[in-house]
Amino acid sequence: MVFRYFICLLFLILQACSSIPTTQNRTDTAVRLAQLNGWQSQIITTASFNLQSFIPEKISPSKELTIYIEGDGLAWLSRRKMSSDPTPIDPLTLKLALLDNHAVYLARPCQYVWSGGCEQRLWTSARFSPEVLQAMNQAVDKLKAQYQASSLRLIGYSGGGAVATLLAAERDDVSQLVTVAGNIDTDYWTTLQHISPLTGSLNPADQWPSLQAIPQIHFVGSEDKIMPVAVANAYQQHFPQSKRPTVRVITGMTHHCCWVEHWPELLQEISAAKKSAP
Image: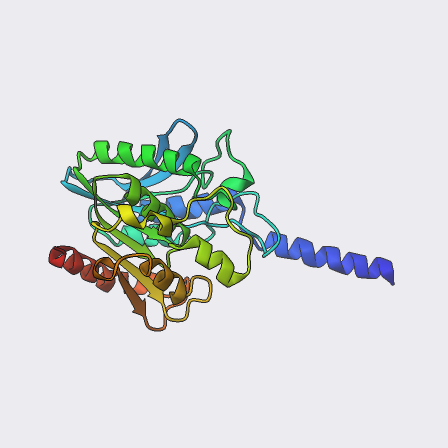
């Protein structure tokens, strides 16, 4: 009886593991999606990591470049089990980027491309560490130079929203900051979700003094249980009343659904907000 139970348990574990696409399958999905839309893969070398980017095959130089920053991807297999590879299963951020004009996509360290310094802490407790931000900053610098841009619009999804916010706080060339279901107050989020603090990571909300002058809009889904509206509200409360960034709650949206379908209209809102910013 015990042996039969063990076999059944092993079967369930193997079945669960086999349902997760391999890293190669996840990478192939993103590459095919990019190619179908006339984009191509580009690897950006930094001091610590090689980072995956996807760029349009034809894009002319412009004063402002929009960079989409990937979320945490497959950081965890379950609440207690870390993933061995954070490459996203569903390339949602890439799908958003493909709907934009004059935009490029940038993945996080160890997504799609494995580097010698890849460790699980870099997509779990230290996912927003200075080490990660240094590599992202170097990649952003290279993309900016590549397209001869003078300013940047940073758009980050989920954990990519935290990265985008932290980058914006460090840089002096960000003309607009946009997050989608963004983890922009990590201390509040870990407390709210009853999970371990992100030791080794920076909290975007703590950087509010450096973010006051940057036009911002933070989209949150009304039905998002992973990154609830309360997280964006907590971030917003760090700012003085007259400087509080815009938080837009989109009715019916969850953490994953249905940002891609509504992105064209939200892009119009983003552009309008930029034009009306003081």
